[in-house]
Length: 78
Image (tube, rainbow, N blue to C red):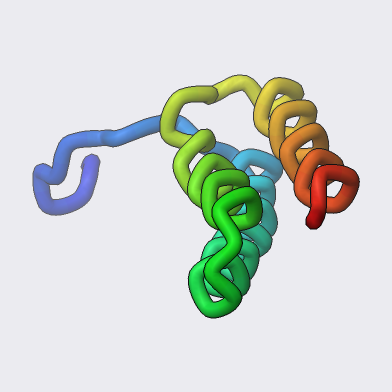
């Protein structure tokens, strides 16, 4: 039995779900901070952090890209 017939979007496990939630939350906060303070860099990196999990399904890639973008957010500040 597969539920109510909804299409399966992906086969995400717990590690992928945690990565999406954590890096998505960091991206959302960075985007809101950049928008509030009229700063383009945090807005763009926050947007990238929020959207990139839709393009990667491998766990290691999710964490590597997320950690890299978070480090970029910290290191490339104004």
